[in-house]
Image 1 (cartoon, rainbow, N blue to C red):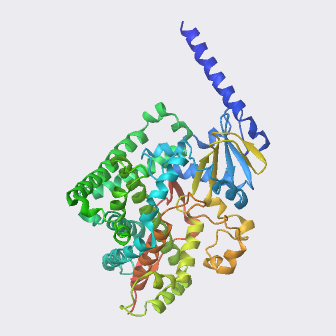
Image 2 (tube, rainbow, N blue to C red):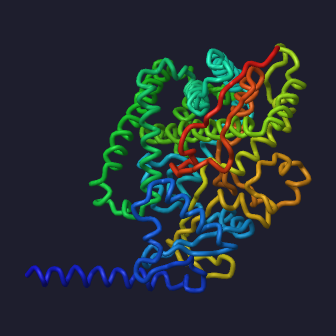
Image 3 (tube, rainbow, N blue to C red):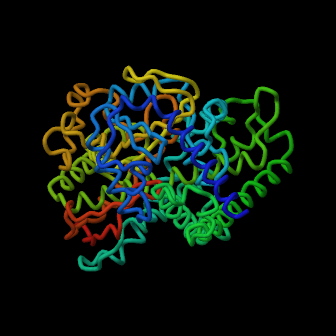
Length: 498
């Protein structure tokens, strides 16, 4: 009986394998990476690796693709796109908004980042767009500036010219306070459980990154027996509980205020913080978001706004320390625009920090906050002349796209902010540079992130010179949904002469 049962299981597995092999036969015309092994494909490259090793393997593979390539997970092809023209075909299609099963690994529900259905995502995006309109963003600037000043004041005791610090930790604390203040209208440091939330969010991102880059963890039953699963489970409970308490508390406060809270005046409606807007949004049928939906959207906004801004600002500080001549140019520009304490931080003065923005854009080229992305076909499409059926996965690497020599020159790893002079930008394909993704399903908070980064850098560099003994070639990167440095952003600070 045991042998019969084993034979039946083997036959079913063989049949399933053949079905997948036939379903993926369309990809025979697409060049495959080498080496690829019979039955296994490229599974061995992503089996039992940590996030540094797996990201390094993926980067080497993606860098060999010109337009289209494929990764074989056993019999299942993943289509790799790696050229601006093909990226435009993928990201601009209205029938390519769906996301593949990887995004379920986050287990954060159906927020803007994690919603797999393109149709449901589009409905939510239209409703949430007002949370980042120009008036809202303008209202956030004084809050951002206050938190950035608090950051620079907190760094002052450490600025003795010899104490090494991990600048990312301090900047991350600042961006989180900004997010809590702007998104929820309250100081994050006053919210019970904030520190547990921060630690758990870090654990969760690490666990998810490890799972995505390890195909042996794709299988649910296997993953559930791993240490990563237990870490993920505990971190998810802490993070979901934290945001759920905030949503419940604010919904109760709004209900107590009664109908007077639901202002009809458009100016007042657009001046609400993001959480209040999400809670009070009305769908076409007159209903609002459920507690679960509010929680999931809030979770997406907090996670995306905090990690993107903090990482990019930290990489910027590190590279300005490595390149003191560029740091001096940034500081000179800041001193020209903000020549006295009376000069206000507003959209007009921030726009004048043109070279500073070029520096940030170059950092986002070298270190896109979310280096990998994917889509799933909702129906059959033709991509670069290849017929791709429904329910196929298309993956892309912004990290390697941003380092193509045919686009960025013979030294794409070199830090050079002048790549973002206006004439250089106009000469490039619009989909050659995608730090916040592209097409309609781009990052809703990209203007928020750019504002917060410029303000933090302004307040840090006005007060301190940043130094380091780290070199670009020493940096080791890992994938934890976002692109993290494996180790500290190690700098030391020297007070500037007034």
